[in-house]
Structure formats: C-alpha cells, structure tokens
Length: 246
Length: 246
DNA sequence: TGCAATTTGTGCGTATGTATC
DNA sequence: CGATACATACGCACAAATTGC
Image: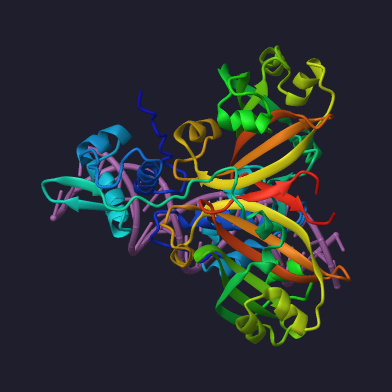
C-alpha cells in the first residue's frame, strides 16, 4: 500500500510534478538519507502507477535542483537533502546553512527607520514611538532564495547596522561591529500563510503557495530583547526541525 | 503599479491553475470582499496575459469550490470569502506541540491495519511489511477542529489500541493500557502544504488554504520508536511555539 | 576475461490535455 | 465551435554503463 500522495490527474498539476513533490517530501522527512540510492525508476513507476518516463521527468527536475544525482548503470542517489532548519536557542541562518555544506548569503532588500507601534514596542521592550531600524532581507543558500525576513532593531543600539549588513551579508557579523558579541533565541512562533505577492517574487515561487511564518525574538547576553524578526520561509525548500531530546 | 504575476509556462502546473491560485490568494488576502464583483474576464485575461478561455477555466474551478459565482450578464462575484481567524501574539495552544498527544478532545475518525512501506519501516525501525495500526484522529479545542492527525503504531505492541483510544479519547491512556507507561518526543519536523480535500472537510477550512504539516516520532523509554505521527494543523487557527530554552 | 543482470539514457510513435487564435 | 501548436503521458525498444559471477 502506498501511504501518501494519491495522484490527481485532473488537478491542473502535471503528474511528473506531483511525483517530484512526493519524492522531495520523502527525502526531506528522512526516508532516504543523503547518499543513499533511490529505488530504480521501474520500481518507482510501478509504485506511482505511471510510465517510467514520467518518473524520469520528476527525477530530472530534482536533479536540476541539485537534490538527486543519477549515474548510468548504478542508480539514482540523494545528492543533498533539502535544507532543514533546526530551531533552538542558537539559531543562526549562516551556521545552519554552512553546516549542511551550502553557501549562505544575506541580501539587503531595503531598510527604513520607523517608530515602534504597540506590538513592536512590546516585543522589543522599548517605549512606544522609539525609533527602530527595519531591515528587509533575503536569505539565500547556494543561490536559492530560502527566506524573506523583516528584522527590527532599536536604532540607538545598532546605528550603522544597515551599512554593515549590506557589506557583510551576515547579521551576526553586523551585530558584532555594533559591539554585540552574542545573542540567543528567546522563543519562536510558527504558523503558515499563503505567500504575499512581493514575497512570492523575491522567493521565486508561485502565488497561492504556502509559506511558513516564523516570528522570533533574540535576546542579548543580559536577557534584553535585541531584535524582533518575522521570516517567511519557502515551505517546499526548507523544513523546520525541533529536537525533542533535551 | 500592478504586481505582475509571473506565469510559469513549463513548470508542470497548468496556467489556468496558476491563475486560479492567484485569484484565490487575492480573495483570501482581502483584495476582494465577499459579494464584490470581480473584474470582467476580458480584463483579467489581459492582466494575466492569457486567453479569455484560460481565465474562464480558472473561474470555473473556483465556482465549483463555492468561492465564486458567475451570473450571466452581471459578472462574477465572490460567494464566500475563506474564513480566517486573526493570529495574535497571545495564541494559547503552545502546549499542543510539546504535549500534542494529550489534546483534551480527540475524536477517532477511522483506523486500519496495513503493512509498513519503506518510509514507515524506516521511521519506526521495523522490517518492511510489518503490520501497523493506522489511526486517523481529529483533535478539537473549544469545539473548533484544530488538527487532523494520522498515527502509526506497530500492531504487535498495541493490539487493542483502537478500541482503547475510541473509548478514552486519549492516546496516552490507550498506550498505558498496552503497558507503555512513558514515551518521549524524538524530533518534530515542520513544513507547510496546501490542504488536501479530505482534511479541508474535517477541519472545516476552504481548499487552497495552507496547513502546517507536523511530523514526529515518539520513542519509548528504551529509545525505540513507538509511534510515527503526521499531523495537519489549520494554520489560521493555531501557532506553533518553540521556546528557545529547550 | 567474458557474460548476464541491473539500471540509467535515448528514440519514436501515439493518444490526450492544454492554450491560443 | 473548430483548427492548430505544444506539452504531457504512455508503451515499446534498444543503447550504454555498472556490477557481480
């Protein structure tokens, strides 16, 4: 018995793409580890009830995404599982990405100075109306956009943040230059929404696709709120992982 | 300026479906209120850069979902805007993630015995073909459906689980009766998808809405996998909270 | 070394679905 | 409502690379 996706032939989504998503989902959730061999095409075709060509097209799409690699005569192998993003007190995008052998980058999309409204003032523990720096950034792994994030800082604490971030592409480094040596994740709240038009364009995904919305507050070493972040994560490119082990 | 949705011509997703999702996203995000009239088909066709037939097909699909209604000679109208509950910083369901299996109201939807496929065998560390109990359950809070979950157990370990769960409404209690006194969450993986038709009905949400997919494995006190769960959470009703302290 | 089995890669003909005009 | 062009999916066959005996 097949456990998961039943193929929908009249949904306006090509069968090869449905198979591609199904395979990606299995790889993401750990059914196949990195480097392991996939079942042969003929077997997958039988399992999905389609022609081998159709499976091949799904594999080809995943190959061009760098997720699979096929060797003639040997088999098809998991080249690099889609990124998983472990959430914990020391969550840092660049470390997570480089820890999975990918090249991280942070691109500055835009920035502004604005006054703290009630919500932000509460999140950052500052008086209403405090001047904040708002930064829009796109985080990229191996050239593939992963997260669109909006970050708020108290302007007085990191006056030169925008220039430093634009130069280095790393939030941690930019904060270091402002004299902030370390920080910890306080709490992370996760929900999902349909992607907004602007984010869809930045992430290069279609409208109507879901994104995970990750809200978090970082604390400095004194336990004072330093940064409030609202990230929108491309759901099909990344998986959030919460370790339950303690 | 109109944000131009880029239509992928060779993405394996039919153009009419991309337009359908784009329109749905606009309705969800409140660009059109309930009862308001959509632009005429010719105008939409021009905006998306497609033939009017293609727009008509998108509208037909939305009509069959009950989202739009077309009146000859008058126009196309928003019949029912998908409902959405605002998510605030004080959403209170954080316990459900850490103690997801102790949800106060668990309703048994169905159950079956099936053989472990490759994926489940791997997750549960059992041989391929091992008999598993699959349980479909709906978890409700304050009368509002929150999560549709599918749980798999090795049948030999909990032979009477279904009856016990149906009687008590509690997974923990049902496991206790099978002699399993305690278990721990190994890891939780979170991603987001568009809701499937069956889940949409159970959760009482519209098609096209996102759900958070929460996959987890529970270990018994010996560290052996006991249960694999795949929960679909109504994203607009619930927020997952991860504390940074772990 | 040879040879068979397995697995990916490729070509072609056909039927159906999709989108335009 | 056709007529047309293209993408999608299928079925069959065979070539090329790898592995194991």
